[in-house]
Image (cartoon, rainbow over all chains, first blue to last red; front, side, top):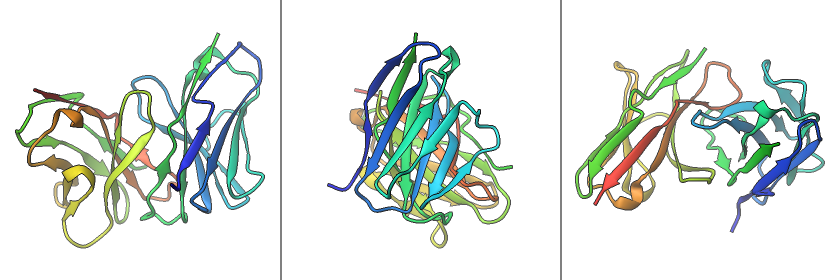
Length: 114
Length: 113
């Protein structure tokens, strides 16, 4: 089945140790998004790629970076994780950037920072 | 800036009864409204969306939502609740120049046997 896949499902890292989360999709969608969802909160957009064009939200910390080497894959890099970065990280895709397009979410990666 | 309000943190419904999960929104321009469901430690599953046209939108798993422009609401409904409907429900809006979805805080739906 076509889908959005995130690996790993659970990631434990140490304070300050760089970590990379992975997302892949078989939908051949042009847009890939990364959302951060902290405990008991709504998901919040960090950034997105439209094809190779990277778009950062104004309030996303510099500590968060992203790469999209090809259509199928997108990575979230946290350069120096802090305790406050512990969260569920959700990857989503949509066919286009149009407002009416549905975003399809992966299962998420839960990040724990020790 | 756009926003979504889900006024109830939790909704309790007996199995077999109708359910309603409330959502109101604020956005400049035409609203594009979505409902997602999240099960524990899982991602968001798309239920339904309103783009234009008929104010009653039908979606997955027997859910439907009613768009009311004058009340800026998009309440989620189901005629007969199942225990398996118990989950966290998010209403979201797209528009106003934002690149992503703006979500409400979510409503825990608990269906009691």
